[in-house]
Image: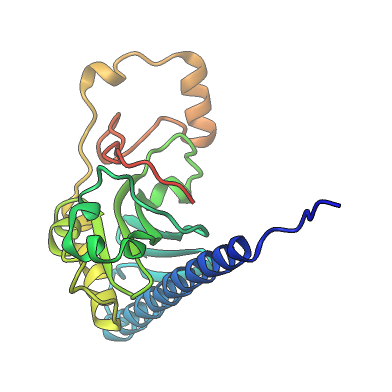
Length: 231
């Protein structure tokens, strides 16, 4: 009778790979908890320092779930989302060309935390057509090293995968950079020709639920992610 059980080598390989991925996931989850702790402390410190100011400037942290957190300040919201899967980069990605990854290809397996920027009014008035922007992605590997793909302040500062180790201090620097980028990323009026014609249905819907689409750069979506990921 044929033995239908997997051979020992296959079982050992499966156990080793998924144990390794669990370590990557654990590091990413701990990083996300660290992000939450930094944002909560920033919110508490801000509220304490500026509690007597009038008018008050909102700076609020909300722990939404295991995989999502929100930081609201001024007219903006940053949403931090941790992906539940572990990814590897495509062969064309710059990370795969580094000596750090060539020495040990397993270092290219990473967990991912995404940072999105939305207008606070989009949620306040339930404007479901409004756009948000992916401003950064944080990748953490099995050795708790990290690097970031992102816009301006975020992406330019954190691209030393070999030496960048995630710590509470580096988590604060990342969040500071995300806030700084968001504050400097101002809301622009859309081109006149894009909004000069509005249907009656659009206007009636807008009156009911503010559905005229708004974003900091109307019509722009962050499409800079050419890498293919696989879990």
